[in-house]
Length: 136
Image (cartoon, rainbow, N blue to C red):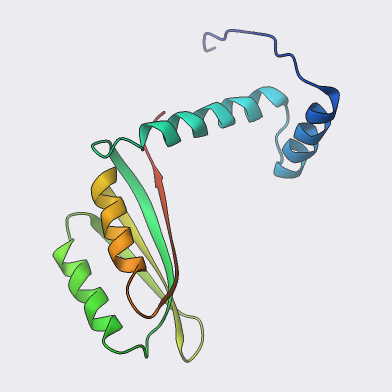
């Protein structure tokens, strides 16, 4: 078994009730695992603020494929960044709307710049970058 350190936490009853409700909805079996996940999330968030940190992530975007030369521009960007873009998934939501997910790997600064370039393009309705690391 792993070496585990136990520590106490002082918390207001109302805040604990809200926390317990949230962890129950998310399916945690105990507070410890929920707290460990919160700590990991914070550590990863802090670590990925460094633009030189190696990371992996996804860029999810919704766009109108009839929007001018958007699809050609997206394809060109993807070829220009073939080292950071590991794979793509393209789904036709309806006649006009596409959902595309890019799986990315590289330095967080480069991934953020790539995501900003794409999401700022005319025709992109929504885009969201999620970055993580192998470990906190």
